[in-house]
Image 1: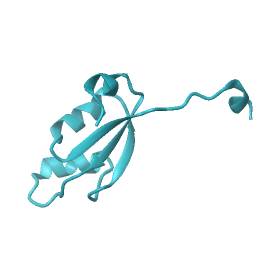
Image 2: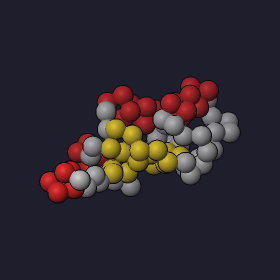
Image 3: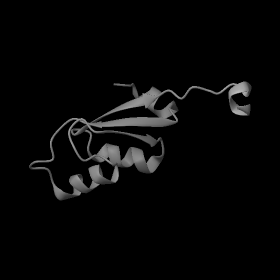
Image 4: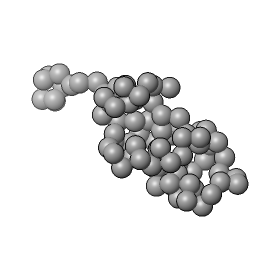
Length: 80
């Protein structure tokens, strides 16, 4: 799990669903669907925007969040 500082600096977040939806409030189910998570272990890479962080904040007990390190492309790679 990444620290809050790493999450704030990251361009993208990897969100993983770690708990079942059984017995979970319908609003929380909808939030997970909006994050693109349907099954336990499902992962989705999302942009680090306030809207996404707000959805994650509503269901922290159901997901884990990691910062995704995006490798910078060199000029040669961009030209190809």
